[in-house]
Image (cartoon, rainbow, N blue to C red; front, side, top):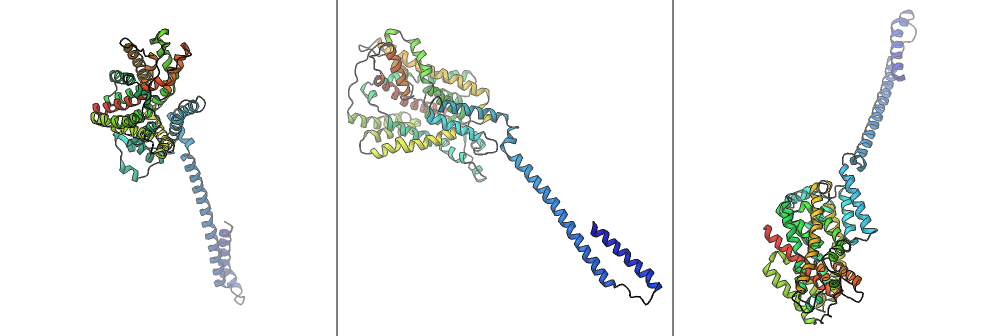
Length: 452
């Protein structure tokens, strides 16, 4: 501003000099107009430069302020205000952390599920997009526009890869000897799957669609990978709630089963001591996985992925010539798969998918399915005792659910409460491993029924 006033003052001085003083004294030197004009132009340029600099400084202040506002708007904290459901889901994930770490409930899978749930519900993280897998299909074109890390990892669930790899690891860690030594225990494992089919019709009566009812019913098998495998194909929008329910109830086997077992058996029945199992030859253990794969696959092709991987893992264990592969499947491969499976399944538990009445229905029906499966095995054992000379302790019937080996340990614990000399663990392992096969077969039947 000072330069502008100076410019006006010099212009006025020039005007007065040329028009007044020139008339009074013609001999007096005339002011050099060229020099004055040059000075005026220099001052004008200086004024323009300062004005532009001032405008640029103001614009920089405006742009910097807008950047700060945009930054604050993009933070997760500001988005939490509009996503109150996400806050609830974060609290649910914290609860799962507590159950996995402090209580030790299925920590190997519950902890990754909880962390996946945490990641997917953090506003602005954009690590998982449920719309990329809408309507039960993978929308590959969406991946070209940008996808999160969990979107890519979830393909292993959607394509049925992770559950099959888990079954391979389970097979490599499973000894089918108790089942081969007492083939009647296969019936107990099959009976425990009754809860799955009864729950299916209960879910239909509650208003669930057939594909949803089938996915919910499989919770009764107490087999997390099977539940994930079936749900990812029939009702992927329910994968989060069903997976959380399945693994939660698996972890609560020592809490849920004992009251049912005591209710359905007498004290004398719980004291029954079973005869020692016969030894099983190596040949039997090698032939068994091959024969089961062939027979089940021919009768029920939809069960082949799960049964095939389960028996392949078991063959690696029993053949005696692939020890390195067996150890790899049991440890490294299975551990890596568990991390990917748990994290991506947890990621499907978004606020919209989890916080609704269907989730409550799934949790309620799921525990009914699990309880009915446990009860069916006990009741069948009691029925079999009516026709058998060597009695079966009905407690091992509850081990027919495929929570290996937790359900067998529960049978042992409850049995020793009545008779400390009663050792039921190996006897209970027969129906327990039969339940693993039974749940896979049940999943194949559901897939066949739904036409998938």
